[in-house]
Amino acid sequence: MRRFALLALLAPLLLLLTACGDGIRERVFPPTVSLQELALQPDGRWTLKLRLQNFSNVPMRFDRVDATLKIATAQAGTITLAPALSVGPESAEIVEFVLLPGSAAADHVIVASNRRSNVAYTLSGTIVSSEPDSRRDDFEFQSQLSAVPGLPGVLR
Image (tube, rainbow, N blue to C red):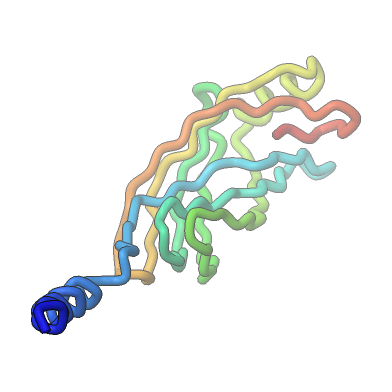
């Protein structure tokens, strides 16, 4: 009888604890954009592979990216994308963009490609997303691109 009374008291408490949540909290962090690859084209344009990175544990929809690309200290150009792309939790997707770069930035990339060396870049701007909530995040990503052996005119 005492066991039954104890069980009758504990059952509502256990039920209440179970109802408190599934243990998974939605965590939304600012996304970022970086360069995955830069390929020189014969007409002087660059084909950029941009990496849209979602650090959240829920899917994020990238609606718009407005960014400025600098190579070394030279202005390369502006990037405006409307990918309307959902990126899974803690994952990334690659999108392409063709850019006609500024001449000083183009010279830095050509030198790095010919010498098979590195060149610094900065990509900064704003990402607009609509899921899991509407938000506008500023970002800045700095890194280096390196010439890819065996692939002339390609830097990663």
